[in-house]
Image (cartoon, rainbow, N blue to C red; front, side, top):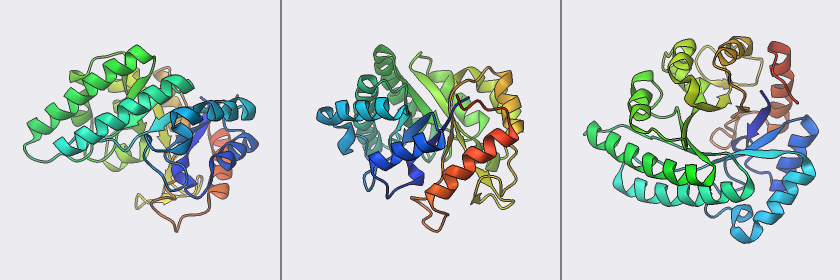
Length: 267
């Protein structure tokens, strides 16, 4: 299970520093959640069609791949769904050209009438998943917002049946929602394609890897049971919480923490 980190953790870094740091620390991949001040996949300079060849060269030269493109897309309202569909479709096209396997989206907030929200989300995910499948890409719904319980995620998964659809399991979000990790993995194991990993304190707040209460070896045992072999990605939310430690420290600590606590393979 190779390690990666999300660029959410290094909002001030340019693309060269991102890949150089990943290579220096032994990361297999990076997860692109914005570069510098830009979070929108369809306007990030390096992802514009004319610049993708340069990004591919950087990936090749550094030996670091891109494991996912993270959209801001959500589909809970009509206006959000229109924007979200366009951004995700663009991300799928970019991912296919770059050899990136996954594109992340959100479910967002669940507001009355809930039946309409579910219908809107599943309709958009079905259409996007079919586009993705034809391109050799998978759209991942993250366990995030109001969609972080087995019942709510299950309702979506039961309606979106496509080779182009899967889940991004954010461990912190399901943990804080009181979801048993073993039960979650047992229900959705075949759909889990990517992992967001974090350490948190007893109040559920993000902390440096190894300073909190999360034991990676427990997660490893669960992932082994479902045959998971994808990336386990540190989501250090420096962009949203600027008071957090600097990315150099967090990314270094993550590499130290994971192999010591579990048999993750860095190769």
